[in-house]
Length: 188
Image (cartoon, rainbow, N blue to C red):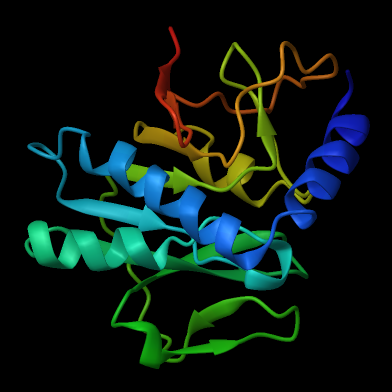
């Protein structure tokens, strides 16, 4: 199946979930996340959930990290829709966020983080058995991840599709993807 068809199907499936179902699936994702090895991780890039799109609740991951790994720096993105690029900013808590014009939570302060990132939690609508993903189609994360040697971790409310038929040379593959039931590792 191609990206457009997968995107449409995955978005409809996600939007059919109730808030309680999203919370339950997010709690299961947290269980998978908490089982990862954080021994060599100093900085994690974490996307912030768009609740209106029933995205996984990554605030659960942030709270767990602060409680269990307070030494790990959490950074979050700020999107520039005119350039399709992101900047990265220290996460200071939910109270230090505001919604952008596109209804995306972003940090209020503009202090940009430009240091090394060890792990990126990557948003997606769907992923395939090879580690390719389908997002919203703007390419923010592919541009950000291109050429970066970081651990790329997808976060999916559902299991993988077989194959995304129209992958592109600029599509960046995940190293692993967390689902509510398991962690899927890719050879890349």
